[in-house]
Length: 344
Image (cartoon, rainbow, N blue to C red):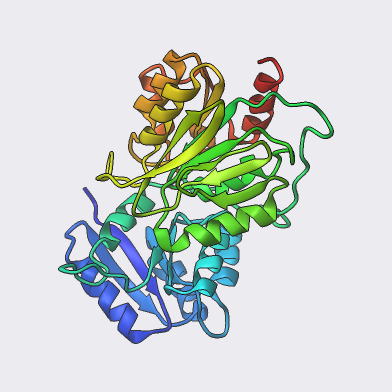
């Protein structure tokens, strides 16, 4: 198996050194070079042709976001955004994921007993498996046109799970949701440092209200609720006919917290056939078994197809076990959701 070649781009010599040390501990990763600016990196990309690029968000001369837009337009490749643990850095990292970055990684966040950048190699390996598509000039996910206006909607629960590539995919799906959409819950694999910025970014993009889930808070029509990353799982429960989110402290499931399986299992239990489940791009199999339980409980289930996934892992796992009613390209998912809901 050929090692994954990585180019590190960061204006901090300390950060470049620490990332290099962390990545070289993995025999299946080769650091082929480091660059302090986007202009240095541009020439090194052409000369070294790395498999994966790590890119600092905040850099002089040309920031990471500007450079990423050029990369995704001219030479698409897997990019991991490395962000400082700040509000500005987190907001920019979320925008980068919409443009086409595969992952965002919180810089220098450590846990007791763990070394700096210890889990960065795992992120690099995930990124190396991503399918990257060229960004079209002028494409802007901020333009949305809700597909239903001034109409009565039934209110089944919409539940969505996603991982690698999910920020971009969710932006595509949700920006066309009507302001009076059915209650919607989402489990996206994302570090906790970026959860609030992600929710606020989607709230800016979408007609419905988007917010982070709160413990035992109701989910109502016209709301999209996102599971906070990192520390707790999100479930839904039904009480007196209303749907509430419940945040649960448990060990990771399928290596993730929040887990899509945990969310989908609760939807199957409390919503039955009054729900629509969607599984989007992502590595691994989280969500597959939960989506199968939703389908067996009578819910309608949709999976993103291979051609439009950044990583065709989670949807494939669900498709292979018979958890999906309909597998379609990303751009068709929103229409399919509301076509189905209109018939419920």
